[in-house]
Amino acid sequence: MAVLNIPSSLRSLCDDCTQIEVEGSTLRAIFSAVATRHPDLASRILDHQGLRPDIAVAIDGSILDQSALTEAVEADTEIYLVPPIGGGSQNT
Image (tube, rainbow, N blue to C red; front, top):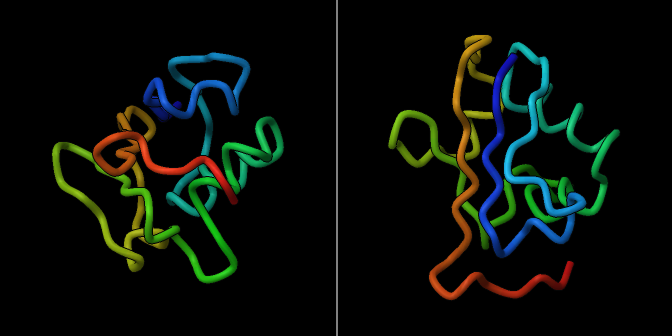
């Protein structure tokens, strides 16, 4: 399963977990799985257009753009959420 690493500034949105193991073949599928378990966290990652502009997603040290939501993800992928410096606002 892929592992979504949660930064400290967002852990309150997922019962203070540091990582979430989820199944999915694309980032969109992974974030959909996260939404069923932690809807508040998912709403900080995605909006109706895709990735929210105030948070970034990284795999293997590379920051991804909107098109990455449809790219294939390996089962052992480590995904990192990268909030803006200072943690950003937690308002949705």
